[in-house]
Length: 267
Image (cartoon, rainbow, N blue to C red; front, side, top):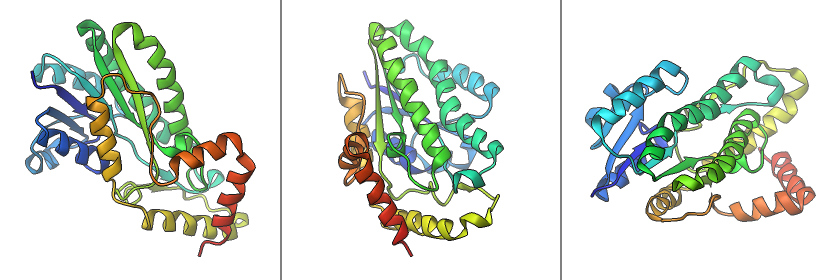
């Protein structure tokens, strides 16, 4: 029987790309979007309404989803957004919104699906995190915090779901060419003391994303994890990803000096 796969945030970026590829490979795909009517005619898969910031939307989505399917094989948690800026210049309100969407929204959608997975006795949860869920970089404090929280949550959940034959895994991409920066929300509380550093940090971030590769490796890894029977938990993706993670854990000063050097030389 054809496997059924749910992809949240399927209107753009990794979500749209992987949903299209899964459809081409013969899976039955359901995507989600805050405004499904805007993209339904443009994609070959079913799109349902889901707003991660709205509890009523999540509950309604759970009921609607299982009107269309009787079995769900894979949940790909992908929806989220990026708050950029220096930590002190981002309002607490905006920081909370970042956590509400990227962390709590992901948790709430997962919790909506878990009873169905437990009842059927199997399932797979693949969550799109970020390399900054394993370490943090300038101008991404709240985004990194949200992705660190996601990492911790799903690490524990992986143990807890093992008795139910529900597999839990994550991907942690480096920077790739998607619309995440164009759709990002920037902090507005500019503090003059940071003017010089902010200029360098923003130049560093812009250079990293301007030179980012196409997201093909991320999509390939997601497709592999869909098909893999017993995937391991962490999957850093991108040039130098494993090296950065290793340095951050075992040679933090070297890692820190490398980032500081790149920030200070950015123009």
